[in-house]
Image 1 (cartoon, protein in one colour):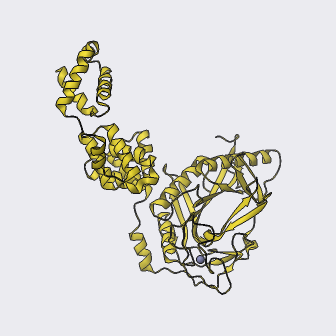
Image 2 (cartoon, rainbow, N blue to C red):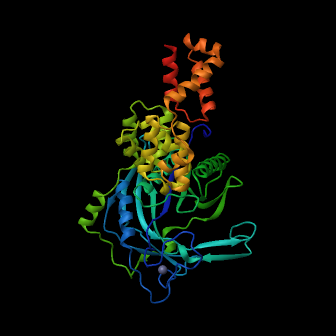
Image 3 (cartoon, rainbow, N blue to C red):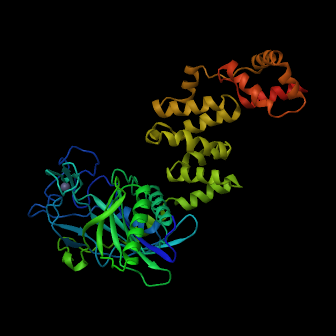
Length: 476
Ligand SMILES: [Zn+2]
């Protein structure tokens, strides 16, 4: 999308990610999405009088991993109380990090090399979840509201970018890359639809070269697609207001997915409205140098490095292959590919099977061991099973957890002996003498016809490569 002449958007993103810890940030309640409402609660996460928080070591470790992956400086930090009327937070304050966050001054490089500054990545606790009953689904016009405190106290890290993005495509690329990083370091499952990763977009517009304009914060963006739509809608709205001689009010706006519009939610609170003060029940957070060094030493390879590694294995990378590599890395399927390559399978075959068959059943991936993946595509590469059979074996392993050998035996996926195949091919040649004559004369288009006929005759059990070899041998 292009903006009217001379206008430019300025975008900063605030991304909240729930951390994949076993327990909540300040108590031992399970951090478990989808449990029966109000079952994972205790006096601490309900804010009952006299309860005292104890910080979760695993959450601190994951926060440091995020900071390191985003090239941040990790520092000793403090927690504050952010006071507010929260219907979904019985304490009426949220414990968050304010002026001294754990991670600061980092950056994230988009795949095209564009650098976005990370101002901070701080820890805080999540609120509970309200559900408003009524046609609007929002608190306005609701008949009644339900509250589930299972989420209250779940650890979050909020990652705040600089106002560095200038297009909705950059914002999209930033969130996609950030999501891949969070998943790779094991901090998050990256599921925007389930709300475990939530994006707020700060959008303003200006004439190129002028100072920043007044920004609005857009909430309720649940997918990459809505992020792009919401940013573009909001930028055009602001330009229209300004070109009509109006001014932009700093406010929080709600994105309505169905109507494709943003609307005023509330005027933006200022930091002083929250009456922040140091959380008196927690000491400053000061991870030892040894702990920090240990986290750094155990940081896994990040998406950018993994994409580079896979690209180097492929060599000359086409656009389609670059997309395949990006899919494999985004879904954390690189382990399969790298292991298969180490076992001698061509990288393009491994990438293709991972980005298609495995990716299509990604929720079932725990059923497919690396060994089973390698076993299947090694057989395909050796010509023991055909490409069609190999794809089916992978999908069946993903669905059932059975072994490739068992599936091949059950389905009778035994590669036809060359002699049997030669006999079938002889029959097809005599039934199609004109096509055979064209093939012998060197018309390359007929080869697909013969392979198709053989596949039909063998119900897909022949190996395409072997068929081509036999055809070429018979041509003499
Ligand atoms: Zn609790």
